[in-house]
Image 1 (cartoon, rainbow, N blue to C red):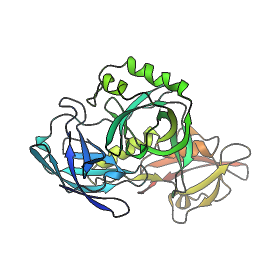
Image 2 (image 1 turned 60 degrees about the vertical axis):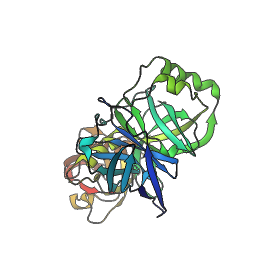
Image 3 (image 1 turned 90 degrees about the horizontal axis):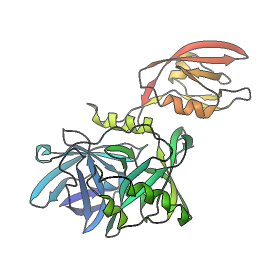
Image 4 (image 1 turned 135 degrees about the horizontal axis):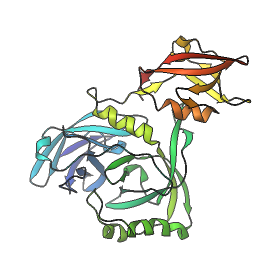
Length: 328
């Protein structure tokens, strides 16, 4: 039996079915069920028995898998990505490999995952449809880089974690409710036809049995953030820490990112940056607007000293900002 606590403190009893999807180099996946109903899947993060899963999986205590019993404990949860970290207490009994860091995404990249709704767990195909853009997530006053994807419409998209082979590209952080015309389905269907059996242990035939369904639009966090999540969960602290600069910006009329707010005692404040300064360079990256700035900051690490170029009353200045860390 498995006790699962949700973000809203709902507790249920659950058992596991079909735990091992692959026994070779693919990341081991375990399906979690509550009262016979699937909740989601967790995927092996490393050889120490840590697993990563969507927020809905919650905090499992004990898992029964066929004749084998696997005990888990909840370790941490990242509020930005919505991903949970769990640890199997007997990892040596689990065969297979671990997931990999995501590569940069390209227009047309095909991703795969599983959705869970009611009694049905079904494979889902998605396609990256455009360049990186910036968005603000609910409850987070900070621009984050996101990728738009088109994916097969399902009833509960928050249970999906998308993969490219063994690379974890994360779960949906925002979705649109309007379904795209089914004439676009040929894109996902063609991609399926051309790919061999993939590393998560399911074949093209399994996908073809389910669709493709009508397409809708969703958004994934950028690969820089997802790499930070995986590296954080793999770190000795087993916690995700993001770089923090400490400013709010808007587009400057003459180009660059104009600072409109500086957080007291933040790295920006301690470096001497002020409201009205216009950032034009961070590290080796030119800053043309606030979106450039929001995307660039995620590329650095907490504690890193970053050179900045900025204009103050039309005079060019330079300095350094030592980034701090923040968790969500």
